Image 1 (cartoon, rainbow, N blue to C red):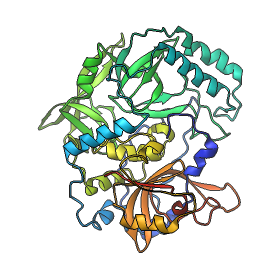
Image 2 (image 1 turned 60 degrees about the vertical axis):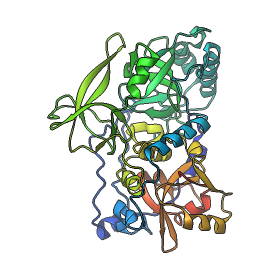
Image 3 (image 1 turned 90 degrees about the vertical axis):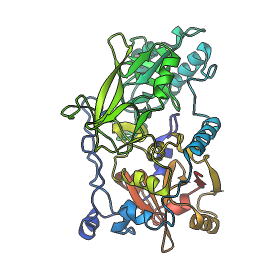
Image 4 (image 1 turned 135 degrees about the horizontal axis):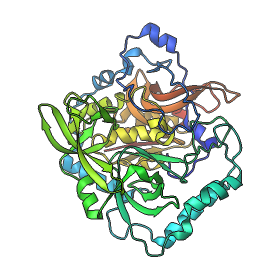
Amino acid sequence: MSRFIVFFSLLIFLFPPLTWSQQEFQAKSSVARASVSSNVNYTEGLAPGEKLPALPAGPLFLTGTMPEQLTADYWINRLPEPDRSLKMPEQLRFFNQEIRSMTRERTDIFEPGILPNGTQIRNIIKMEYETISGRKLFDIEDVYIPKKFFEVAIKPIVDWESVPNKMTLKWGAATRATSVRALPTNVKMLEEKGDIEFDQLQFTLIKLWTPVAILHTSQDGKWYYVQAPYVRGWVKSKYIALFPTRKALREKVQSKKFLVVTGESVSVCSDPACRVEFQRPTMGTILPLIQKNEAGYVVEMPIRAKAGTALLKNYYIQLESDVHIGFPSFTQRNIIRQAFKLLAARYGWGGMYNGRDCSGFTHDVFLSLGMDLPRDSDQQTLIGTQRGYFRLGENAAAKTAILKSATPGITLLKMPMHMMLYLGEVDGRFFVIHSTWAERVSMTSDEKNRINQVVVSDLSLNGRSYLGSLFDRTIGINELD
């Protein structure tokens, strides 16, 4: 998802019609459910009085997909060399440098002179406020949000006029996964009535320990306007711990001894026996590692003290947890296994409800293996080797030829506003795993079924809807090689 506000009318082009039958899955398949933790706090980000829609039972079995195809081993066993290292650690570091240099939204906050000055920040914040306040938006009760609300409740808090020409930057780290917003408010703003899953103020969700440069503080002190590595926007100040200097922050977040969360999420506990769960960071989160002993892992967590300053404390992760010291090897086996750990994980626009949208899914999979993939799908499709660009519904023969030779696990397929991870070809059909919200089921109307999770599907699906199949709507193919 892009950092910029995206109209919902464009968004729904993202979601391919996928004919599925949960009853058929239950009758035909004994495939075990993905180990997606029931402890993940999906209610995070709910507005007061809002009820979270129930997630369809999953993993969903889509028509045209065999039950055994909902396992990572099915796809891994089809590969000739699944354990061959695709990139050695040094090659991966060099590849990440290339990604950072070519991705416009990727900002190295530690590089001197890279951050905007005071005048630029004032203009950016003002532009973002005026853009959003000028739109026709609705609240969760389907009531139009009047312009007066912005003028009275938000503009004084944004307070862009107080940004000085010469800023004194502050440096901090996220003490938990937290939303980055277009405006300093928890109020959900929807482009169409009833679209509660698609808050137009939601940019993304940054992970625990994400470093940020603090560019401005809201008038009430409850929000920081920050620059993170791949997004700029408003975060709650209570979730940012302040470090004394940029150097101190950099040394901690770039620690050479670290633990990577390789499961969908893991328990970080206040005690070695894990009687009290403190937090549950998600896949791709990197934690400074103090030591590993017979009781488990000891990691460092940033705590925001009363004055806002960072207090570093030791917390505990049990040995059997799905974590890895350093990054796992960058192989097809590991990539596909990571992807299937998220099967049935909740869809979340911009990380809402601690879920993942399409590019959030691919981002977390590759981040857990050490690849610094951009957060936005339009940027992800520019990484690696470009195998082909296509117009909607055209170049079927060329597209087919490319897919037949594409490498499973490291090939990304781009649709308008959507990203999918390629799994391979079976009997002339091409399969992907991706995080999607809904399926369309009509040639004449906007009728759709809600999926709202990570699923496996083939590209021939959706052919009977007016949008066309996933195959027809694939406009880009790139390999992360």
